[in-house]
Amino acid sequence: MLTLGEELLLVALDAEKGVVRGSPVMQIGLNAAGLAELVSAGWLQLRQADGTPGVTVAREDDARSSEQPLLDKVLFQAQQTQKGDRHPERCLKNWVSPSLFAYLKSLREREVLTWDRPQRGALYGRVHLLDADAAASARARVERVATGAGPSERDVDLAAIVHGIGLDKVIYKGRRNRSKRETLTTALAKQRFSVMLGRVLPETPGQKFTFDSSNDLKMATDMARTWNRTP
Image (cartoon, rainbow, N blue to C red; front, side):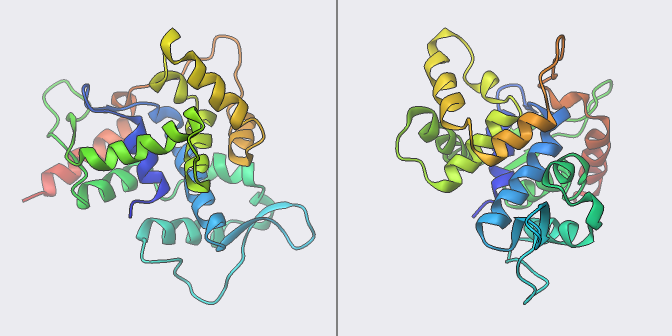
């Protein structure tokens, strides 16, 4: 089973153009996905013992959260976060692991996607979707919330993150999808991760997010290095 963060990347992937949309804010979205998944599983909670907001480890019985290496990295990041930096919104903004590239690499190892070697003048190679069913399943989670078709808690968490980083305006663009955008806005108005992301990423006059991962030079460098190590 894919992690929520991996599903977020599949929703963000533009298979026709071969890029990940929303990469400038995707790390924050991935941080939210990791938090949401471990909170749902009972490994993390968003309040401290005194009732104040703070990401805390709820279970100390095992250093590993599951058989998911990415979630283990999220748990380790939570364990290493200093007390003064544990406010959930600060964690969303400041956490750097697991990285966007780590999630992409995991999808590659699962044979869900891959990417080409960068050509001359390009930041990195085109991303190719290998498992269309996995991408369709991830997109269906958001669709169930957008249409009110009996979404699960996991569906709502993913849709809230998609909405919170503004990706819904891209995948549901145009007049034809206006009702879906409105349904998401209404359904997720009080959802905790949607609210937190809305505060972490406030809309300001003139603000624009470039929904094209080709602008992410760090990820481009990592992807090129990985390609060069591939037999």
